[in-house]
Length: 356
Ligand code: CP3
Image (cartoon, rainbow, N blue to C red; front, side):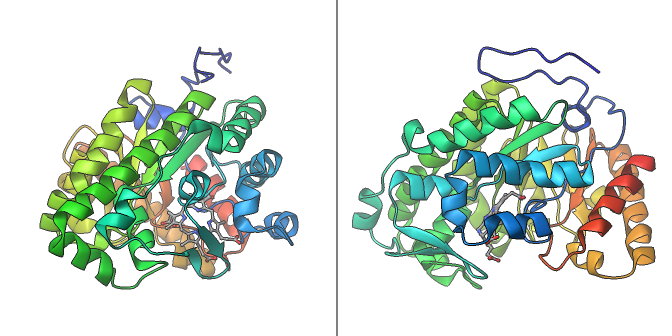
């Protein structure tokens, strides 16, 4: 094992960590694997520790964040922990009135729809997310050689929650705002970009080893709209954190048409959902970046023989992706673990990926 050394930022150096090697185009000792939403309702120990504690309340309790983040690492032996938090945590911390409603998602008290609403948006002060920094310090002390991924919501996905007031199927108000009043739209995304950058910088300063920007709902946009209304802002996020020198991962769902642009926005690793095979994703992203993905999370609810077949197929696709110019592959699902998933299946997937 490589000894850990402390950097001035509090960041550890983990040159042998498979996730960091694969993201940087070095050869990992084994194929790295982790799962989006690996911490959460699929785990009985999560349901137990969260009983009677609100989602946002949990996210501002450093000891609880540390414990919940560690649960899937202990159970599954994944190559990365992802900070237990939520994309709306920095918005809440900055003073926006919102809640996370069980089985629904984020709900915003007063949706943001006018220039005046946008002008009132706060910025994030690092002290407002001190609980997150504390949790990261606890985690880096406990994780050993396992990488810790920090994250934030991308400006577009955050904007969708703020404009719609909650989860949305068609993002209709969001899309009409961007086209009818581009000035207000860009001011809104500018404010959210500032918040996202502050939130990521706090996490980097506290010691995360990689960051993932979730633009979960960007797949609702055409490529032209993505390039005009979204990409400049996401690009500013990636540029602002580049000097940290840690892998930057970019992910969204249903983004097959956007993969090239999402790579151009500046990520080192592009996350791919299950709709596009990794080799095709590598062609769309272009050479020089690593890929992350892309087992369909729904399959984990079925027979093991089908899971095994698909895991092998994803790994074979990843080999083709590397032939096509991708510099590495991080095994993951195409979106988050579904709450109904049997956690022992996830553990078996980790064992299988590591063995192949
Ligand atoms: O393990 C991990 O992946 C880390 C934790 C994590 C959560 N949210 C915890 C959570 C991460 C990375 C997120 C990001 C997030 N939050 C995204 C982007 C990722 C994605 O899924 O595309 C989005 C869109 C949100 C907004 C949000 N928060 C949704 C849609 C929901 C689910 C609503 C529900 O109850 O089904 C939440 C709540 C949430 N965030 C839960 C968890 C574990 C479930 C709440 C609970 O357990 O009570």
